[in-house]
Image (tube, rainbow, N blue to C red; front, side, top):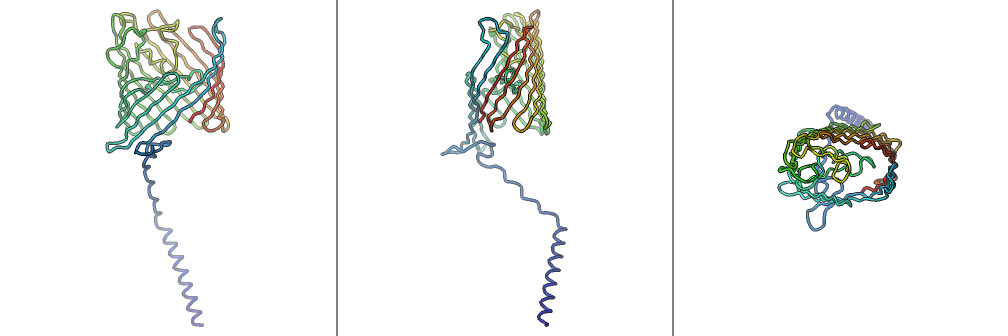
Length: 354
């Protein structure tokens, strides 16, 4: 009996100690989880990098293959209304971790003979890369070839949520190619991202060298992006005075060049009467279900030099359907009005990204 009472007393005491211990532990501050270890090896450069056997080089391969097909109305007799074609792009990103920091190189090849090759280290990038004035739109007809590739040297530095970029690039000249600027174009660029909102500001200085004279040109732009979840919004605006290539190079326009009827130079032959112009573009994408989105796009380009002028207005509506991961199709209808001449058409793109 005494043994039973002693055992009961011991069990009750142990239970009381456990309850008291649990209550005391509940009052203690929760122990913080150990911080996640920083990525090492190729993972430190981002997703998609793999180690190259036999060394410390990391490699990422990406690109696209697409089918581009267009129908355009109101074509003059003898001109094709239909355009059937394809395109591809292949990009190689190579990275190494050295005692002095990360060294990266990029080679990007497209079937239209566009090749970007550059090397970057400690914020500096030299070679050929996308220009800061690249509109960055994504639509089929209006967004085809929306890359403003430039040759130069740039330096980028993050400051909080903002990244500042300063660059010297080959002159973006638009005087029929008969003369070139004696110095590179200078660019200052800032990009700020806060949550779902991104804002870009850019300024460019361009030396106008005409047949018998010269002048000083410049261009500026602002680009805004916002993803509201239920829809995403994009806006772009640029102004140029004697630097008109910054208006349409990034928009994929090829109408304002020596190979077409409409030519608007940066200036008069003596470097005076600098051309002025503006470019506006905007798009809205609205997801519809899991695999579809409806897009609306519009743009307007206007350039005036002395008595010469060029104008282009374009609208487009598209439906993008994702068939599988990395594979999508987008039919689009569009309307263009170029210097008073209107053309309408349809476009369909099938693309495989990898």
